[in-house]
Length: 369
Ligand SMILES: [Zn+2]
Image 1 (cartoon, rainbow, N blue to C red):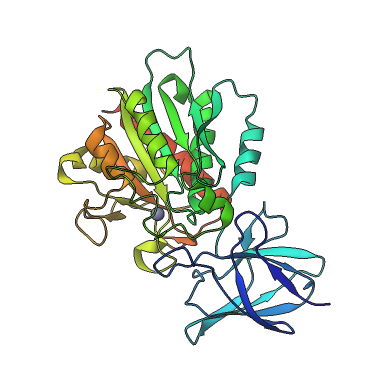
Image 2 (spheres, rainbow, N blue to C red):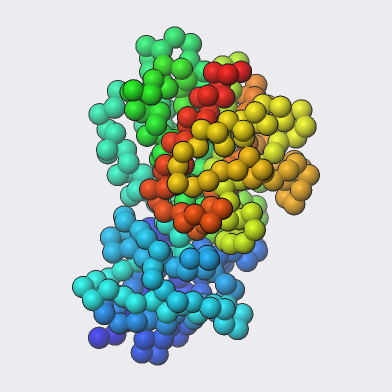
């Protein structure tokens, strides 16, 4: 049987250069980014019971845990693969289960429309979860807006959450699910205290098309908060906040994932805002470290300080726009790692558990102001 590899499904991204039996030479498609990046996700058919050798020829696209695998695109785990750098790339040897007609392989845990739909279906009857369309993307896809709002709550505070300004940063959505699960759980009484506005896929086209999104040409969705934004989602978010972001708007968390591996990229870390916004942020990172009871550690020193690396406050990012144009007090970017958090393995469920702790920390921060 011939091995078949394709990316013809939502979130798919692969270019196969050459195949020879169980050996494949392949690379990530980064054609619409102007910098190297590492997202890939493919389907492998006709390889049941065989061991494939994948030669990734365009840089080391693997995390420290190697590739991930799924039979159904829903349940993902780290593949039991051996891997090592090879030439300008990396080679992975991946055993394909005997009873798997097709499997999906990726660099972490993909999360696309179908995952969001499953999450929403699970909560379809929730009286306080309201789904609508924020806007329509450049490729005519709906960009979802979720509003978690208890109409009986008296003067709730306001929280905004967003993800996927960089399309490839899929693990952030598992963290987001956890936050929303905590907020939707009646016993937590969170929606009596705050309403939550959520844009789960800012770069919706990139998510579904399997784009890198990061460094999108001519600029990506987190460099679009300019005088004349290029993307419909940016314009719609600005319009939305124009009406919604009043004095009750306290917290804005933009969820991202960092570089593929190494150093702080293998921690959950927060990006310190500019000096004038630091006191609330400093309090928050300690609260988060205290309340986090998930299997993924957060240490209060896991912070990218203002002025370091790219965190200079100069680029027209969403965080900067919210900080400059709204009354929100706690405005930060959270970088959630793809594979390891201070040595603990990231999994979708663990990312959700961290998201629940993040929700708890956010509410504790609001109440202890
Ligand atoms: Zn990002």
